[in-house]
Image (tube, rainbow, N blue to C red):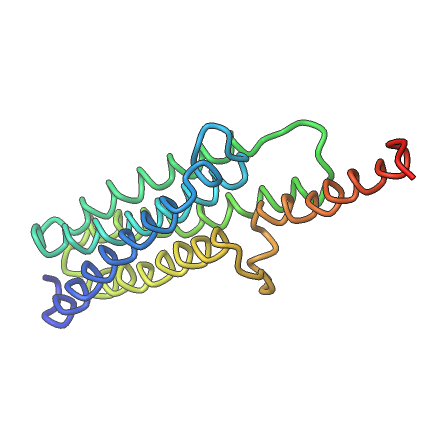
Length: 198
């Protein structure tokens, strides 16, 4: 490892990542059709994919850092590249024409937050590849893992239906579904007086 104390960090991170990925699978498997099935709304699919991408990124980065400690930079470059590609794919899935500007801003922000975090991770991996003795870059990679865990946990929590009150939660595309739900529930009530029953 670049410094001895990072070994314990990556060990703990790999264990936490494995547990969190397992819990995410359990949470999604309770209602797979609602979150990741073919008929699931693209907003739910995107949030589920984002949570999975973040947790897998942190898990594999930590695990591979323990196995091939001398190639931490290569590991980070690979995991961040896959995460960037997955985030860009979610941008395509979330695109819909004729949305309000708030919904466009929300979806763009959702994608940009992921691209920023994974972009910084890729950049730190490049710097560390150029200078393997740069201890600061190794610590930057470790700190970014905390941010990546934050993304994964926040989006998994949103997927389970938790209330979204923070600033970053506004950028969740699930808010679009929440805004559409009241309109859907009002429609049947509005039609009930005209069904011919006294």
